[in-house]
Length: 225
Length: 83
Image (cartoon, rainbow over all chains, first blue to last red):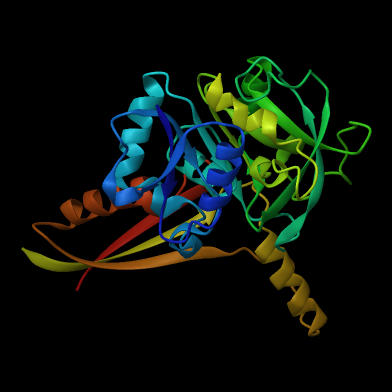
């Protein structure tokens, strides 16, 4: 069993996620997109970066690569799939998850730590946390503003598909705490089933106790679920 | 078969925030220009060979639906001319 970390030209968080998963004792390997998924794939991680230089729209090119058809197939069979940052953009562009992550409200790249409120603790990615818990993760993106039609977002909320929202240190979802203008502060969502999820913040960057807090471990433990 | 050029214009749907257009508008205003609004759009020109104009349009529509536009964010227009 192994988690495939899919590398595209321009991925740059692939090795960070590998180290984070290995630290948690989760077997993982880097998978070059042209090589396809290994037969023994038990999870897929779409890492952050700037695949194909973010040409056209972030994630648009990678979403069309043949390996993403394989990812959709294994996802439909119940294999857990997590997209982080550029991986989240690829997830939305390839219809694994709804909506789109597009240009930040300020039109500027944001690189900082943010607070996130757990909106649904009943998913593989959040079961290590409790509902309403406040986490601190880094973000680093220019196109992280979650956009979707209001009616569609209402349905996602009704179906409990919002995973995380940007909040302040007390857990209040406010305009000031929203780093990129995401609609209703959405930072992460699940796909049609909750073993498929995407998020703009980087859980893998808060996993190693040697370099700081380890709030992100719970998300990656979703692969060991 | 003959040559056609299809011009695809991809713009944000009404109601979708356009931070780059806002920033550009503010920059123009700082330069002293007066304007009421500014919208941005992407334009692609595609040369292709097809039996008829409608054939060319159908193929370009497929290209646009699959890659050039994102239906969550964009509306698009296609104009086809003989090349």
